Length: 78
Image (tube, rainbow, N blue to C red; front, top):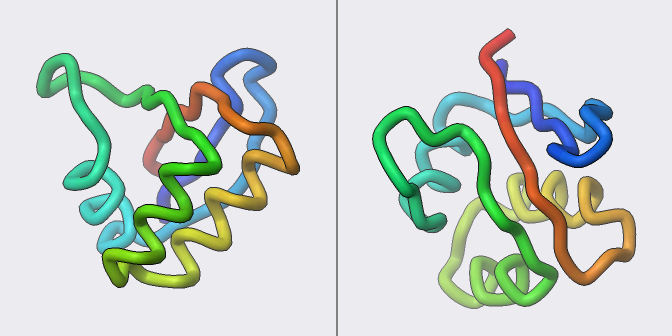
């Protein structure tokens, strides 16, 4: 499993599968191959939903946002 963290507070905000991580990486912009932090917006979640991305991944990301418009999110392998 993959743990998601709020990069600002270092609080764990969710868990996703390896397959969901691959979808997230494919969607988000990476600065380099070592990048494990992404800028996430509520609009990103809406656009991912329109593109047919796994609904449970989108639910996890919306849960991480907790009503905020944006955040930096990072992941680690558990």
